[in-house]
Length: 284
Length: 330
Image (cartoon, rainbow over all chains, first blue to last red; front, side, top):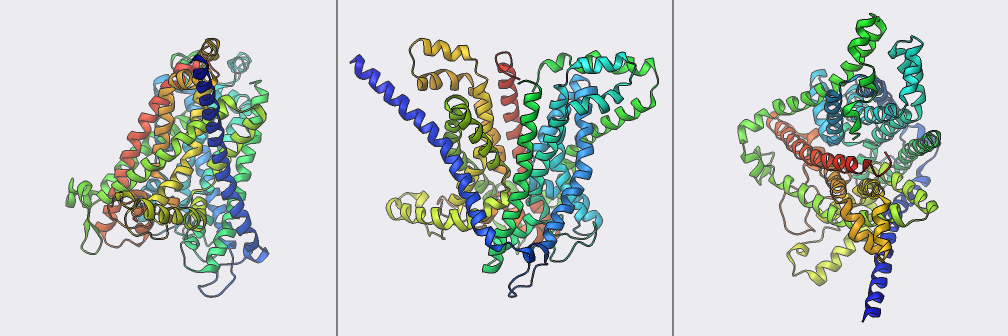
């Protein structure tokens, strides 16, 4: 009896541990399925002309995503221009200056903002910017993306600033350097890998965002004309082409998806390398 | 997240007031003011968001009142707007997605935290991070052309043929576009988030707890099931709710496969709408103040629901990580 019970326990153990391994394998298989399809179907669509030319009207084969690549670059640059300074400053404030109670509130609000569905951010920016400016614009899209970026950057900046030992600040203060100079030239440089990780995470996230752009940047089939005009973006182009009934557009959607995924994954790999360096620096 | 900072971190040692008193440093004041303004702007932004959403949805709020939440009809032509179908679609797809994703996530988290040898652990964690980084619209593209026609469509055919007497599997099969597809793609998308959070929680369970159990002769599975998972229960529940918050607000991939139709049906094969998909697919074509206002009110409802869910999740995860802090890494 006791032997058969031991047997059952051992079998259960093996089966359940196997299932755990299988679960992890499933997740990896899902990723490989998505990546392999995107590469397999996207690669044939890509060529120099595809990367540089404008979209063609329905029915004319060919055309490309040149304006969408430029558009995504402009949108991400706008988002970085607004989001990085704001996020960094908020993170510095919480980590270095804020009263503990204030810090808890700001941290909480950043988490709330992080949890807001991106489509809601889009609706918010529509009401705030698009209606006020009287039309869809690249600027509105950039602001929407910045709103998504800020909490990511501020939280990671805060976490990595806190890891910098206080002795560094004390050494600076003992030399008579004002604290803000110490923060800018000692604390931030030593927390740089962490801070950069946050920035790259935010960048990777917003580069692929579609939902907040639908009614802010809107998309365009023309070249970039200015921040006050509607602008094309890779994710928007993928969305519109994917749900279209035209085979040629669907083919181009895969090509655009491959370009987008390469951009985003490069940023993610950069994050990985940065964090690896940080953990070895701190001996964790 | 870090509780000791509430008592005193860098801030306590460099008291702001004493520094400003000692010497009137202009740069210091400017810098601190800028930083404080950025932090304040963050708070102001969230308040402004609530204000904007409420004022812009006022026309619909006044017209439909509480009936907006219970109305089943969504008809832009007659200007009758009820959100119940979208709320139903959101809840059903999200819960179904969790039902699929949670067992797999926890299994994968256990594998990554406890079972996998070092090299596999690093690679698998890395791949999981990549899975989290893939943009929503690419998931949607893949779902339209691979998941739906190759997997879900035939699966629905099979379920309809053999289990068609169940109400969930009744109704026409629209090639796979519908609630089931939306749920499956959501499950794939929340998987990496729940796995990563649960993995971190499981890692924080003190070794002594496991060693005690193993020393008593328990198998590894018994140790995991009876000690590790219960010890991290509140944190793991938090990670699941975090996944729920993500699923509720996820837009693009769902919009692309759910069939976009405002109806309430028990059948999992039926096309439907989630709140997010309804806003995404109708907002830019919406004409008329009341239509737009109703969509914005939908965004307000979505905001409120995700806010509550996320706050609960954060509190649970914070509590769990605080509790484990003494025994684990930071």
